[in-house]
Length: 300
Image 1 (cartoon, rainbow, N blue to C red):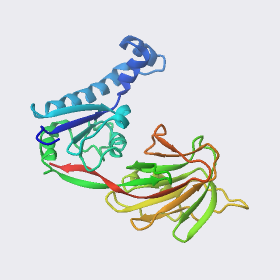
Image 2: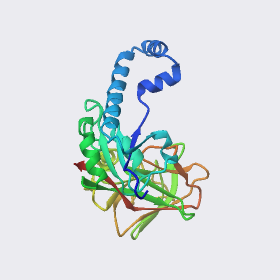
Image 3: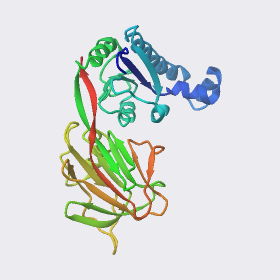
Image 4: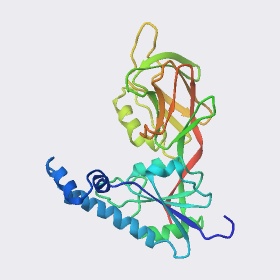
């Protein structure tokens, strides 16, 4: 928007305490519910207050004459980000991943409201640094780290982006049936599904899978134009193989998977099953390094 003040978008998600109040109506009812399960509402509310304080500190760090918007995680798919936005995420690392696929180059500042609870890989900053980082990021002076993302494309033009990983398999988590191809290698398979992960995702689900493999891969770094794929619990049969179970996908290659599932096939990213693509019989998904990158602020 030419000539307008900079805009800062604050991204949040519901805290455990807010969720309890939404379900039970009052603090007293939430306290009773937790007590019946041997838990204390005071602990949950204390965590809520940490997040609330961090949100308020971020808002206080935005210059008074700047525009500001707030968006809840549940509304991200309906929110219109502007090209010049500065995005501030307050919460756990996963909230950055939830936000990333809706962005296209805007700098993202990750604020960790509870360092004793969240690792802070994608939310490395305290709220005390908010003003300095916001001003630097809005002027595009902040140092950013580009983080590679995963893209899945379907023949009808539908696309799915993810910062950590994309899962391909059965919606019911029963056996997935498909044909898989990478490079010169192809085969039909029955498995628990396929994970395609970026270097950011290599610290999570993909890392756990890789550690259990005898021939472990060297997983990519977050900024590498390389993805890793893993087939989960592949099943050998007279009609299916077990050879194409792990590998790397570079910027010049891709992985294709053709569904042999009737009605239950899905693709979803970063653990959000509600935001999924249907993957029915005969549909081919092409998985590759995404052209977009998350621009994560690492220094102001």
